[in-house]
Length: 92
Length: 92
Length: 92
Length: 92
Image (cartoon, rainbow over all chains, first blue to last red; front, side, top):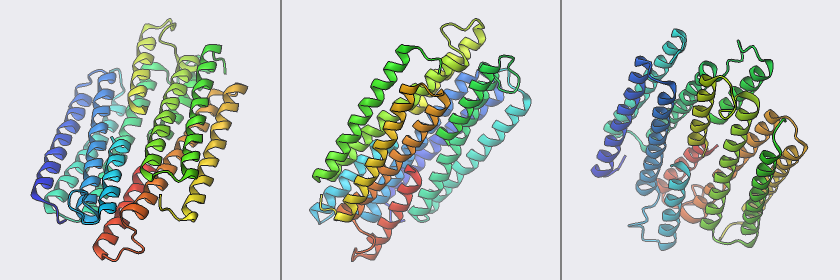
């Protein structure tokens, strides 16, 4: 993965926050707090995993397909920028 | 949460497996394995979180709305069974 | 379907709007407008179908499982209200 | 949209099938068939719209970003092929 260090740190920070959310669901199940609260914690976890999916996909596009910021072909740069926008809309 | 012990143990086992999947994504990001492999690990994690969502929702229906197996009103029992089927279709 | 007339009219109005969105995608594909615009039209259509899913599921809960507004069992009314909230969060 | 005629015909055929599914939901609502059947028709429609989303996104990648089949840069071709695989996994 030829990713920049910045990307890597950002994604690792994100997955660690998700681990914290998973542990919150585990504690909530263990403590037998209200079922509706568990459902809302799981909904937040789901949103965070969708956000991570979009972020990893965007990184893949920038690092392994075409980076809108640096691609020398303007049509491909535009196509990649549109694709990233659409993935954010779909996955979040 | 008036859940049975069985439900609780099943859900806790499921969230622990999800924690294992989150840790696998974290290790993959840290080890800089291929980006496509990270994407597939995240896709599995996403599927597991959707499965947990459906399971928690189904438990909520059975324990706090209507349990198709025990409800004394046959119409409500049928409606709840159909609802559980549909949620499985939509969330998995 | 023992639905009220109001529910039925609301859902039919919603599916007709969705038909309009499908026709807009068809025209966009036919006219070969920009691909990014087609993607955004499809994203809107997807959102509208998710909204319809949530609405039909909510109607099913109210009409065939438990209606929070009229159920004589306060625990079941509360459970059904929480369920409807959660389905809105998940499906929209 | 510099799409091939083949792509365009395939997508138009797909959106027309979706229109047929929307009309089936409309008829089902109008005829007041069982609510569970409406829910299943809406679930099929939702799946078809997800399939269309993945297809339009894949076409966008091939036509405006990088086509794995023809790209002269082997790393970019591989990255685009992996991306298309992942989008199919996520959106269907």
